[in-house]
Length: 201
Image (cartoon, rainbow, N blue to C red):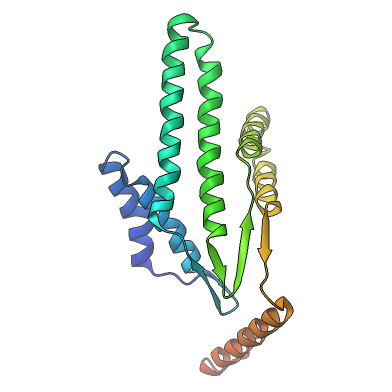
């Protein structure tokens, strides 16, 4: 479950993105970092908290490399536009698609690979090329079906994310799961006592 506070959510998902816009994009990596950290830090498995071990500098590194892709795209667009005006979009659009896939894959991999659940870690292996193809083909199929394939596209993307994620268990995972199930059951009984009603978890 996720334990959230409205003030934290407001700052993380509204104020920091607004600050990123006002600083002409300089704070975009920091805003993304705050959002990823908020989600991880406020997530639980049973009563066990997830812990983020990544920093803002990691996201700035990703976005600086993405900036390099943007510069290359602009230079290619300018060069091809002067020589072959009709070919420029055919080169620039795939590059921008790769840019979007690169940022999505690398930030997701960083978030999972640098987060832990007690002593257990995660390994995310999203590939930029594969993710770009899924984005492109999902967009094409969704457009051709006038939006009817949108749920299928979301499930397809979610399946790829889940298939690339592995839990790196440290020790006996069964004991950990059993302990958390017991903790959640105890918590449900306590809440039931407070409200004078039975709650089964």
